[in-house]
Structure formats: C-alpha cells, structure tokens
Length: 442
Image (cartoon, rainbow, N blue to C red; front, side, top):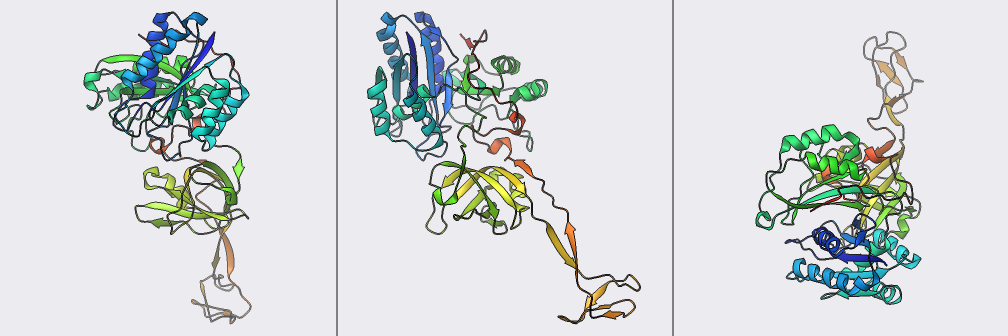
C-alpha cells in the first residue's frame, strides 16, 4: 500500500517542532521496513492565519509498505507524536491524518485553499470522513487542518529543498554554536544553488533559528544534492543528533495567487493587488512606511515595516500616479484605519514622470529669472530684461526607481516568499522524484 501520513500543530512557541517529529519517524519507520517514495514534505500553509505558531508548516510522510503493517505504522506514529508533541501548551492541538492510495482531487483542492486562505475544521473533518483511512485529533483537533493539507499538497509544481539538522536534548534552549566562517564559506561556494543563508545588509547568518526548538540549522536550496553538500560544509560546534532533507514549497510564492480586486480583500489572506499609488508615502511611529493604493474598486493601505530595512526606501521613493503590484498578507483594521496589506513584494509596473517646473533662463544673458507676479511674466536678475510672455519650463527628473520586482531583505522574508535569485528557476510540474543518497542520518 501507499500510505500518506500528515502531521501538524505539535509545536509551540515554547518548544517542540513538527519537522523534528517527522525526522524521528523517518528513522523508526525505516527500521520497521517501510520504503519512502518521497522526501518528507514540509508544506507551509497560509502565513497570515492568526492561530499559527512560527512558520505554519505541516509535514507529510509518503511511504510504501505491506498492508499488514498498517496498524504497526499507525501505532508508531501515535507513539512518536504523543512522546514529542508539546501538549503542555494550551494552544497546541495536534492532528494526524492517514490516507491510503492516490490523493483525490478533493484533498488537493483543500490543500490549495489552506495555502491561499482560511479553511474550517468542520470542512477538514468532512473530507477526512469521506476520503481518509484514519485520523487522530488531540485536544481541540485544529491540527487536522494542516495534517490534511499536507497530505493533499504533493508539491507537484515548483518546490525547493531544505536540510534540517537537529540538536541533542541537553543543548536545546541554549545559544546555538555554529562556525560563522563555515557558513560564509558555504554561502560563497554554493552560490545560487542555495538561498537565504545570510542577510546581505547585515551579514547575519539566517540558517539557525533563535527559539527553543530542536532545530540547529536549516539550509535551503534548489536540489537535494545542493542542500546535502551545503549542510555537510557547516561546522557545528555542538553535537548533531540527526538530520533530514525535506522537499518543500518554501521560496516559491505558493501562497500568492491571481490578482485580487481591493473590494474583495479579506483579513488574514495573502493577496496580489495591482493599482495606482494615490498618496505620497508617509512614516508612522515605529519607522514604518505607508502608502495608499487604488484600483477602481477601492483603496487600501500598504505597509513596509521597520524590520524590512532598505525595502522601505523603495516605498519612500514612490509618488502618486505610479502603477504597482503589491503582494502580501491582509491585516485587519484597527478601528482607525481599514485593511492593510503587509508588503512581502512590490512590483513597479510603470513610473509616473517626475516633472519639476523651473523659472526660464534669460534669453538675453542666460541669467536666472524671477517671477514678477502671477501672470505678469519674468524679470532677469542679472540684466533686468523683462518678458510678460515667458512661462516656467518643465524639466523631467530622473527617478531613483526602475520598473521591476523589489523584495524585503532575507531576514524579513517569510518562508514562502520567492527570492529574486529563484526567478526563472522554478521546477516544472510533476518532475520525477529520486531520493538522493544519503537523504537522512541516522
């Protein structure tokens, strides 16, 4: 049988990690004799849902095993989740979904909806009842949503890879110890085969998280071979407990769909909106940069927050009349302002000419002229030449901006945001998956 095992919401801001549970299961399931038909899938869902923990990621393990092993596999998965899930957090509501055979279209559609918007637990339960072999929901059972979405999302289009290395239990919660020079060398050697290793503005390493979770570091890249090579170049100054290569939708813009109308925007959803800048950008307390966008159906505020660094300078350089395409998550109004798009990407489609009106030069001596009053013409300051018929001259100024795509620095990017270096490197749909050896340890 082909068995798909979806797992979600086992972690907390205080600790735990759903990918770590997947990594533990890789070892245990292989020891049982199952065969993996894909890398563990790490599926990032809509990053704007208000109840998410960190990266809103669910996992799916896709394996082949004898039908007689079903109960053994289910028991193994339950044991690992119950032993390692962060159940003490009241907000953690783990879910496990088991599906046998081909993934039906209904589950694929559900997975798309979970990446692009909000889906209900009732909807997930109804699909599980109709299509899945078994499911287990703990506490409030909200994790069933992500678990089912991970089963349904087979990453059939563009995808990337991530090698995740994990810490031993005694080191969790302590500062991570990695050789900075090895990270810099890896980034230099790997070039565009990996991405978001360092923040270019600060040179701060981005491969290591800062929380109490078990992840020591994660290297993201275009192929399993690339992330394996890169991961082996990292010099850890503490023991590594295990590592696994995941296939994922990170760095693909998977959450950004077609262009929306402003009148159709809804809170907590990722959107792409084209329109015209209708107000000069302004700074609000905290150093955040805001401008207003209109598209004929309405207007919406767009925000580049202080952590986005130089990206705010791009927003600052906009002028009314510029045509742009804004991508990001919709934040609910606060009673004073309406909906706001938290910018993840800004594409400048067309720049309005920036025209400066200057006083004419004196036709006699070339000196500068001054106005003699509204409609009364100009007088030369140097030779006193007067001409009532002269008018100001229009001068087109060069804009600092150019049409194109602009992104925040990597330190401020979401997991799903596609880096500029990946443009043109998207994977074709349904490319065959061949497991690189080795793809996990132990």
